[in-house]
Image (tube, rainbow, N blue to C red):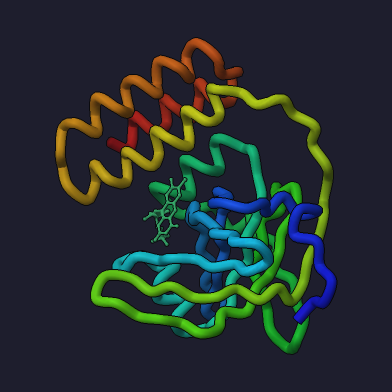
Length: 195
Ligand SMILES: Cc1cc2nc3c(=O)[nH]c(=O)nc-3n(C[C@H](O)[C@H](O)[C@H](O)COP(=O)(O)O)c2cc1C
């Protein structure tokens, strides 16, 4: 456990922070967008059944939360597997942790007090290692936020096939077209291709 860690320094503020959670079982690495929930200095994650992340976290009891503003990584990790070359394995505490090379920073957590329900589990996150690659100063961009919202609606669409989500994805896609840069525009095209 890291004492006196200031979570703000790693971009994890109160509320829900959207991160890319990397996990591994042996050499098999996985990445998926997941929200880290912070209330004061307590951190949690809720993971729904059916994902690789769900199985890996239940089995290994650790995860890494990577902070990135890269829209293509967000879309690709939602719908497919990232390439092996996008991961960087880091060894500590006699274990191997998968992290994202492109992350601005990452925090590795031990998962404790796990509470299972029929459709998900909630687990408390205790920071055990941190790393900062680079600081990016970037004004809020509605195109990037549009990518995040569109990805969330796309995961709901995949689960339910409810057409209302297609309308929401299109509405956020229009914002991406209006406010995003080239990367966000490429990312929304990629997202449409996964639907
Ligand atoms: C921005 C964003 C946040 C998400 N947050 C969560 C979350 O907190 N918990 C969860 O179970 N799924 C969450 N998801 C859905 C998973 O990322 C999605 O089911 C993913 O396909 C799981 O991938 P995996 O099977 O490789 O683990 C989120 C998706 C997005 C786009």
